[in-house]
Every structure is written in structure tokens, then in C-alpha cells.
Image (cartoon, rainbow, N blue to C red; front, side, top):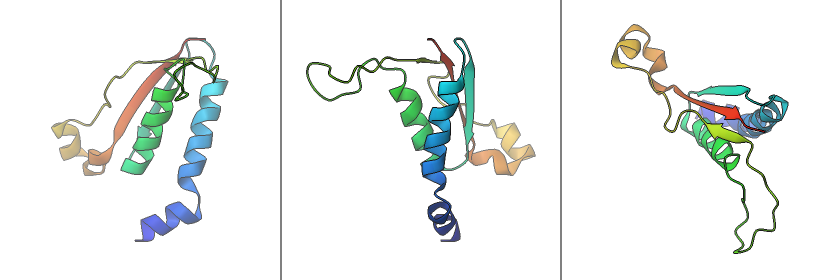
Length: 105
């Protein structure tokens, strides 16, 4: 309960989305972004933004009207998760998911 209140009060999910988009914008061509999330809500945002930026068209129309150009290529198709050994050595790592992408433009 406290975590949900903290996330909402601090606008953590909105700030994550803004920060991730800003970080992608700041990357040079061939620059890489590596994001580690520890909460499913965070991971969903990271996954959605990285996936969105790997597509040319993001509109729902049959004919594209958005003009969006993909700027990322996923390096990790699936998230990197800790091994059993890592979880044994560091139990707090059990919820970690890492995703990586490379800027292509």
C-alpha cells in the first residue's frame, strides 16, 4: 500500500516515461541505453517505450499519418533476468529486469 501511494505522490511512473524519452533523445547514433527495472509497472513502461521507438509507424490508421520514424534497435529481445545463483547471492535482485537498445539514427 505504501509503495502505491509513494509511486502516485511522487509521479514516479510519469517521471520514468519522461526521463526515458529524454535519455533516448540525448543518445548519439549507435549509443546504447540500458534500463533496469524492479517493479512490473516500471518494466511495462520501459518495454512499451523501447518497443514504440523500434517502429516506423505508430498510428492506428490504415495509411500512416503519424510520420514517426524508428530510432532504436532492440539489443535484448527479452529482458535479462537474474540467474538462480545471482538471486541466491543477492535476493533483492529477484525482481530485476534489464532491457537494452541501440540508437540507429
